[in-house]
Length: 179
Image (cartoon, rainbow, N blue to C red; front, side):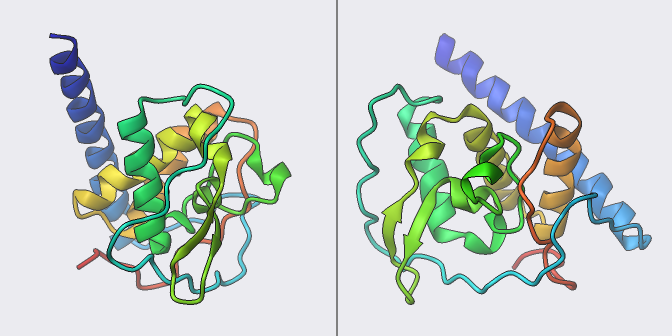
């Protein structure tokens, strides 16, 4: 029974985020795209996604994960496979003090030139905010939202509730609906 309630809560959260994204896309079509105050305007580096196949195991940590391990694993895999999304999504947990520039950095510490993960960032395993932002972005992406709309929905949901955010570059112009 509890798993059905969890599933229902997840579906409801995704539906709420999707409606926010649709409103954001509608606003963008009217030319009202914005860059949040304090966000970096520099062009992001191009990060190749992890190639198909197995990913390295997540690091062992001396603390409990902030979310159930299946959720943690999904978000880490999403970060590995979709840096083109999470490098444009800010994080709101204060990790900019660790040098993070976006939610992608909460999960991936190192990549080879081909996108292969060389080192995971353990911080995300124990941080509820990092995981929630990454999971929301993943659900929106999987629903077909554009990177720009995902960024706007995440900003709208989290920015008012947290005192700081990473200096995350906005998505490139023309990042419409994903294919």
